[in-house]
Length: 147
Image 1 (cartoon, rainbow, N blue to C red):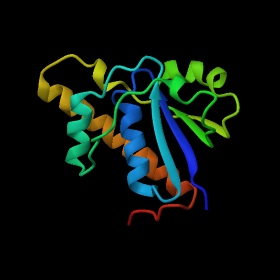
Image 2: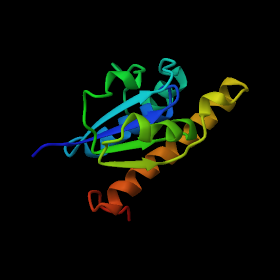
Image 3: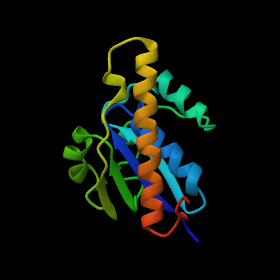
Image 4: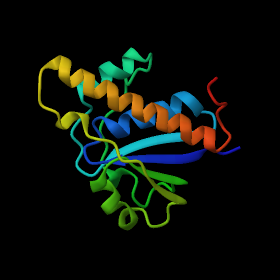
């Protein structure tokens, strides 16, 4: 059985799309092949690595990728934009994707403040992304509801 390919797309591929890619792989890597990319790759944010490690998910080997790495080379069954800027560009970039979904999350990297304030925001967005992945898998009947 071939895996469905899912691309998570955002602006910098530094936080939100990296988290979504890792969570989908964690929750259903047997049925899905998860990817992430950005319109303007910024490098994986150290806070992203830290908050995912807190969940027991390593981002070792993850790096920011430009969407050009995939355009015309990989067919995606789903392209999921996780920010408004990516949503605006997505249909033109991946017109033949099986389905284009938009899950908007605030950018935790845009928050100014102390390290602890930034970590709080990264954790909040991480938890929202994790829940959205779980809800999506449950709605497709691929993940048992939590009880």
